[in-house]
Length: 480
Ligand SMILES: Cc1cc2nc3c(=O)[nH]c(=O)nc-3n(C[C@H](O)[C@H](O)[C@H](O)COP(=O)(O)OP(=O)(O)OC[C@H]3O[C@@H](n4cnc5c(N)ncnc54)[C@H](O)[C@@H]3O)c2cc1C
Image (cartoon, rainbow, N blue to C red; front, top):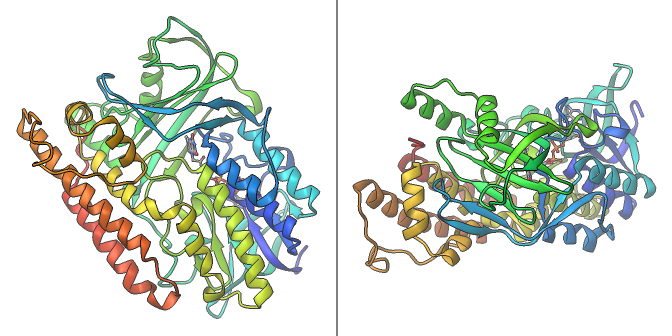
C-alpha cells in the first residue's frame, strides 16, 4: 500500500465512505478505502461508538438499492418507522415530519455495507489514521497518514473522497481556495448526546414514547437551540437524546442563572419522561452512551476541488432542521463514486471534471437545505411561548409539514387576519416567520440556479452568503 497509486482514495468508512466504497467497487474503480477503525467496528464514529439517533427515511435506502443493488432488511434494519412527529413544548401541538423510515442497527448496517464493498473487491486498509491531503500545485493528489503500525505513509490517488465526518482532517487542511470552505460558524453546529436504553413503560402516553413513531420535542429550556428525541427500538428499547446549540445553551443558562451542560440536560430529559422508567444502558457494541456534534447548515457550497470531493458530515450534509445526516451521506457517497467513475473515464479529475457532483447532489437532495437552514435559524429565535403559540396559530398542520420539507408556504398578515396575536412577542414572531418564508423562497430560487460551471460559482456563493447573513442578523438565538 505504501507509495501505491490508486485512481480513487476513499478516506473514512462511515455511512458516506462505505456507500462510496460499495458503489466504486461495483463500478470496478481501482480504489482503496481507509479508516481508523478495526474491521469489526466499521463506521464507529469515536470512542463513544456509533453515536446517532439511527433514524433514516426509506427514500435514501431505496436510492442505495436503485444505484448499487444493495437492499437492506433485518437485522441491520432494527424496525420500520411510520413517521416522525414534532411536538410543541406544551405538548399540545403534534405535527408529522418526514415520511416512512427505518431505525437502523448502525453497527450491523455499516458492517453490511463494508462486507458488500469487500465482496465487490474493494481494497481496504483498516486502522489507518488519515492526517491530511497531499497537495501538488493546486490539486489534491493523495493523502498522508499513519498505518496500523504507526508508520508514516503516503498514498497517491487521482481523486480523494473526503468521508471523514465532522472532524475531517482533509477539508480543514485544503489549500486556501474559493470553493470548499475550511471552517464553519460554530452557531451552525449542534452538540448532541444520546443513550440507548432498555426500559419499562410506566403507562401509555404517545406524547412521550410511541412504539411505532419517532418523537421530537421542541423545548428551548430542555434542549436550547435544538431538540430532544425519543426514537423507539425493537424489544422495549429506546434511543433517547438531545442536541443543543452552544450559543443558545449559554444564553439560557445565563438568563435562568443555571450551569447546565449537555450531559446534565440529557439526564434531565430522560428523568422528566414519565413513560420511560427503570432504564438500563444497552451497551451492545459499547454503543450505549455517547456525544458528538452535527452540522445543521446548508452543505459546504462546493463539495469539490481539484482532485477532491467530499461526502457526508465532512460537507455538513445533515438536514438543518432534523439533523438527519444518514440519508444524505448514503446518497452522496454513491453519487461521489459515480462522478469519480465518469471523471476518471474522461481523464479530467480537476474541479471542472468533478463539478457535476455538486449539481447532482443538489438535484437529489441539497437544493432544499439552504431554505431549511433559514427555517432552523428562525426556530432558534423563538422561546417556548412563541413556539407553543406559533404551532397552534401561525400555520396549519399541512403548512408546518411543508415548511419542514423546505417548501415555503403562502403567509401574510392579510391571509392570517383571523389570528389573535395576543402579545407583542407573538406579533414579532409572526412577522419573522413571514420574513423567513420569503428568505426560504429566495434560497430555493438561488439553489435552483446552482452554477453549471465553476467559473460562475464565486458570484453565486456571494449571494447565498448575503441571504444567510441577512437571516442571522435579524433572527438571533433567543431561547428564553
Ligand atoms: C447524537 C447524534 C444523533 C444523530 N441522529 C441521527 C438520526 O437519527 N438520523 C440521521 O439521519 N442522522 C443522525 N445523525 C447524523 C448522522 O449520524 C451523521 O450524519 C452520519 O453518521 C454521517 O456519516 P459520515 O459517513 O459522513 O460520517 P461518520 O459517520 O462520522 O463516519 C466517519 C468515518 O471516518 C472515520 N474517521 C474519522 N476521522 C478519521 C481519520 N482521521 N482517519 C481515519 N478514519 C477517520 C471514522 O472513524 C468513521 O468511521 C446524528 C448524529 C449525532 C451525533
